Length: 297
Ligand code: NAD
Image (cartoon, rainbow, N blue to C red; front, top):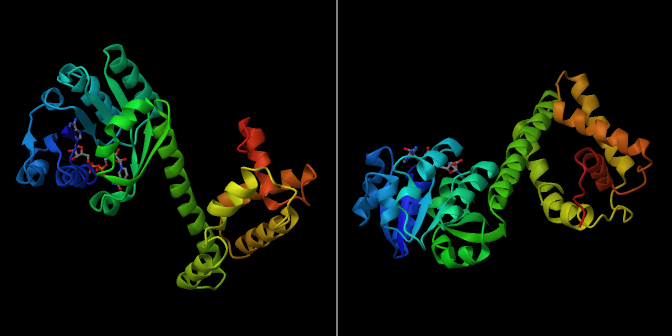
């Protein structure tokens, strides 16, 4: 395939090299021309503008810092839209705002051009080894058409839903990754001030139920999403006791624990609603009520 690639940074660099390796012919661009040296050495052509990249491509990828850059490169002067031929496809690999994606998608659609959001996860190692996960939003037939190119950059490529759905999925993923890191550090600071070294805590968490993936692979899909709160594997009142013991240690050793204390309030609310003898996962109903939507299928 003739593929245009704009944004050859930490992610775009290795992704574009993998497309070359898979046999695609590339036209590339970056505001910093020197970023294109490895691609040009690998046989790629350089183009001075996004419009010129698009004019030569059946498929154009962008991997840019964020919404502002993507909007400028897609819709701005000498942008992709001003050069892309009918029948070609534009796919944004950046982590982007779903509303910006939907706006660009609508402008492209009005001119008869298909646009997909296809954010990626897996970091620089995943980009180098072509083992990224790719979360695609837009028209499913267009997704099927460009899937062979996506398979050259990732080994977990999935169609998520309509335009913007890939961007939403990526933000959910990153929010979980970012916030759970902060939660782990919150717990570790409590544990360390209570006298246990970080590496011992790491081993305890890795070896325990949490570290074995019981939340993401067991409790979430099997209990929460099925609404299985009457099948008690760990009673809510016992989980609340454990959380109370942890926040008590935090108070004893003067560690502020904003995440744990907020979750503790949810457990108190669940207890007040008579859920103490249900499975601990019933606490999710407190957040479901706040959000006005149920995670349960
Ligand atoms: P980066 O800053 O290394 O790369 C961005 C590239 O875009 C740079 O080379 C920059 O010169 C170029 N650029 C900026 N404005 C441009 C313009 N107007 N025209 C042409 N080129 C332009 O960033 P990155 O780490 O490669 O991330 C790219 C995207 O992928 C971001 O949206 C990021 O959130 C996402 N992402 C990053 C990672 C990661 O681990 N780094 C992982 C997954 C997703």
